[in-house]
Length: 128
Image (tube, rainbow, N blue to C red):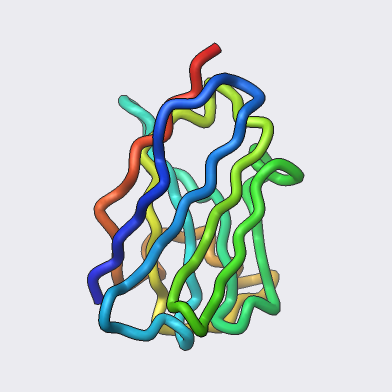
């Protein structure tokens, strides 16, 4: 499964961006999906995850209340709406797919090792 993340760019602090993740020619409806990010010199960190049917969502504490993950299975697309952006949100954002589509409080999608497929990343830069 080839994942394509898009929607990154340069935005001022307090602004917003909406990222998308799609897999042309493939269906994502059975996968749990996650967003991760990696800033220069830092490890990849979890941002948000959503179960296969959108019934469960999980967020990193650093983005809770500002970011929203959602999906449109009819369009095979997963979204990350990012509001009230801060300079510390600057990073390359990656989407990932987990063939095990269910998420719960124990397996909440925050472990990158659980994901089977990764996109190429999209750069988000937030200026102060």
